[in-house]
Image (tube, rainbow, N blue to C red; front, side, top):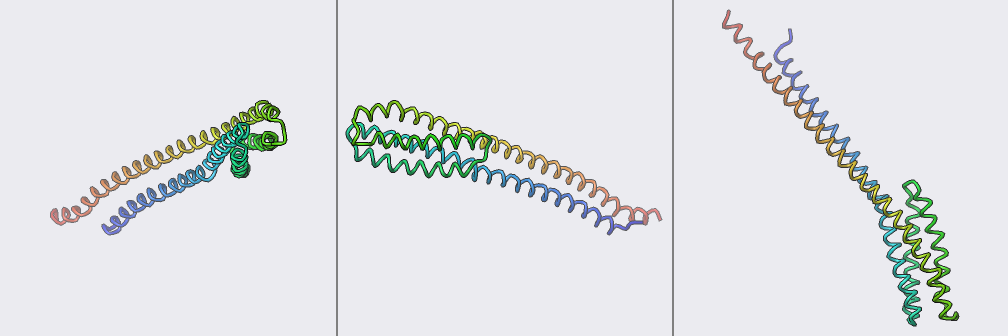
Length: 214
């Protein structure tokens, strides 16, 4: 027959196993959640920032071209030069951070459009060329390229924002899963503990009852 000490040991062992199960389960879920958050920050957020930088640089390049056409050539040229470099750096980041379907094609399209845009900016800034010709190049070529680049950058930005939103939702679901699992296991632990306390009382009282009857 199993003694009281053995029964107590088995009961406490059962409670310990439940606590370990709760701890291990939540550690695994939290690690998975941490990995999801890290993925959001390292990949999609990087592309969002790169696209925002490209759009801002593009706006300033366009302003520089208009400056040059309004007889502010030095200021306009400096603004264009500086932001062409900013755009190129942001584009490099984006080209090396492809994580979503179709993102590669859209990023390559921006690269091709930007190469054409650089040539157009040089033509608009060319002081040896007739002002009317430079204006025609701006309105015929620069504006259309500007719009196409900005539109494509917006597409990539929105793709990555949507992915970030989905990842955030998935992370929230994992948190809810961890919470519900923990509540369930704690409830089970309380149930087992209550049953164990009832049995302990019976095990302790039984020898006394036996002695009384004797």
